[in-house]
Structure formats: C-alpha cells, structure tokens
Length: 188
Image (cartoon, rainbow, N blue to C red; front, side, top):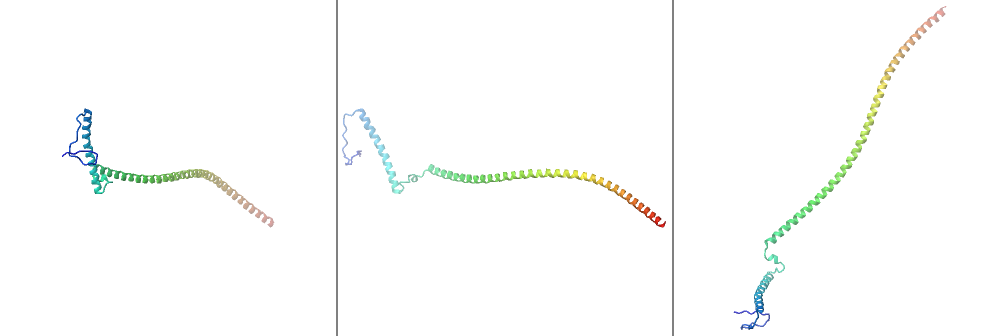
C-alpha cells in the first residue's frame, strides 16, 4: 500500500507520482530531507493530538499535570507545603518572640526606674544616718560635759550644804547665845 502525502483534500490516486528525470543533486537532497522530516513532524502532531483527545475524553484538558502522576512534582508540592508550614511557624515564633521582647523591655524600664528610686532613697537614708550619727556624737559630748558639770555641781552642792550646815549651826549657836543673853538681861 502506497501513501501519498499532500495538502489537498482530493482523494489519493493509485498511480505513483511522476518524478521528473532531470533533478539536480541539491533538489534531490532537499526532497529527501523534506520526505524524512515530514513523517517525524506528522508523528509528533499525531501524538500530540492523540494526547489531547485522551485528555478531552477524560475531561481534564486543563489539568494536564494531573493526568500523568509525576513523583518529582508531588515531591515539590510536599516540600512547598512543608516550607510554607515552617514559614508560618517561624512567623508565629517571631511574633511571640517580639511580644516577649516588648514585655521584657517594659520590665527592664520599670526595674531601671525602681533601681533609680531605690538609689535615691538609699542616698537620702545615708544622709539621714550621717546626720543622726553626728547628732549622737554631739549628744555624747553634751552628756560627758553634763556629767562633768553634774560632778562639779554635786561638789558645790555638798560644799553649800556644809556651808549651810555651818551657818545653821552658827545661827543656832548665835540664837542660843542670844536667848541666853536675853534671859540673862531679863533676869537681871
């Protein structure tokens, strides 16, 4: 059976085509090349059209990748899903870390303020303590001085008592002598 390839829609004739007898080598090469590439192109077109018919018949013309399972494509899809899941996890962790950092920063500021206030209070208390120590030293000096003066006053008081006792005795002696003289005058 002889197949004729032509682009016209007329029926194929059963007679062999007439070949010119005087063809140049270039024309022969061109004709041979054309005759060898035409079947290859037609085979590729036929395969493509057959694949399209199968896809249309199955109703998945738009899903050509799904028609033939491709393990590398499925693997890439799974890796993509894993990467997207990891990315979401990283976003969540980043947000949580950011919130923790914000809270820690607030806490640090609070603690720094508290430390400053405590240092100021400590300085004030240290000044007050120094003043109380100085006051204590002054009071101790005053106490020592008062104790010394108390000793002096006790000596003076004792001397006064002795002087007063002597004066009382002298008065009593004088009064006793005066009353005896008065009685002596009265008697006389």
